[in-house]
Length: 385
Ligand SMILES: Cc1cc2nc3c(=O)[nH]c(=O)nc-3n(C[C@H](O)[C@H](O)[C@H](O)COP(=O)(O)OP(=O)(O)OC[C@H]3O[C@@H](n4cnc5c(N)ncnc54)[C@H](O)[C@@H]3O)c2cc1C
Image 1 (cartoon, rainbow, N blue to C red):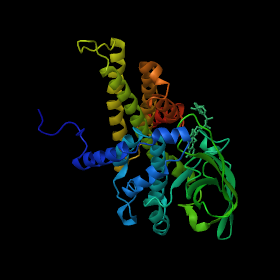
Image 2: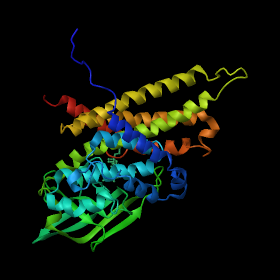
Image 3: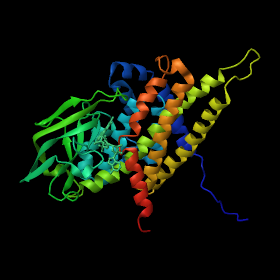
Image 4: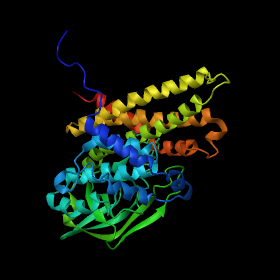
């Protein structure tokens, strides 16, 4: 027997346990999830309350006003928020993991000092603009273009399916600066109020109805050269690297949604008693609960593993894709099971089951659909060591 510890500690640190309880307290007081969904209303009050508690700055360094808590803390936070309201959850996930993280890693000091003061306080929300009408899974097919003209670029094109599109004041836009499919893509910060920037059509969605998903249109937008992120031609690398972190956010969202569904099943079954107080839950119902609860714990560790790697500066594309693949599938299975086990109460809106089912579906589509996660994992496994 060795006296050395042989496994990593599976407990959160006391600081993160305290943070989880702090966020849980915030999330459980939210109370508006059903209304945001029914009224298709942006959860602005919930997001601003989160901003006041410092939840929009977890991925920003302290010198720029952030709390520098990192990816693991952000995952813990997002599971708690999404267990209550996935529309609020995705807004915070995109702001932290797709926008703030990207700016923190790839922008210059001057750029960070320009934008972070507004982003960390929630005065501005951020949006990540990669997808287009003919460019979803195949992100390198994007057509939005930015043509250099002296000290600025002229940007033309339309981005589709942009989370927080109608509310955001800062957009990270990926645009074509050259003919090469991959090396011809660059990333820019574009501000909402600049001439030529407009919000186009708003999508009518199955779920996440409180989260506005819109088109962002750029018509002859004059983008100052100092709003180019990193260098010309590195946009695709930036987009994919950022998505590794984003997928941790969506994996955590999926864990939160799955947890909410499992809790509905657990409460329902625990309340099914005969006159003598014995459980009347059928064995198949109990197996369903047991399988889902075991998978929830397993995929939480998968997610935390990838988050820890990213916090250590280690590339985690395969691990992040594994986390998102498994957690998003679980969210969907758990949501379907909740609706089945609850029966009529699963679809009549008397509880969260039907909303959870609609919200869960999207976790298998955005930030890389399920098949794309499987491709990322397989390619990672087949790559030379
Ligand atoms: C609610 C919501 C919010 C979103 N928010 C944002 C956002 O903020 N910013 C942003 O840039 N985008 C956003 N998106 C877009 C999202 O990232 C894309 O929908 C996603 O990348 C899939 O692209 P697509 O919809 O064009 O589907 P497609 O790429 O057409 O894929 C359709 C199906 O084909 C499969 N498929 C495609 N290519 C392959 C392949 N090579 N091998 C195997 N299977 C394949 C996919 O897995 C999928 O099942 C959002 C989408 C939704 C639904």
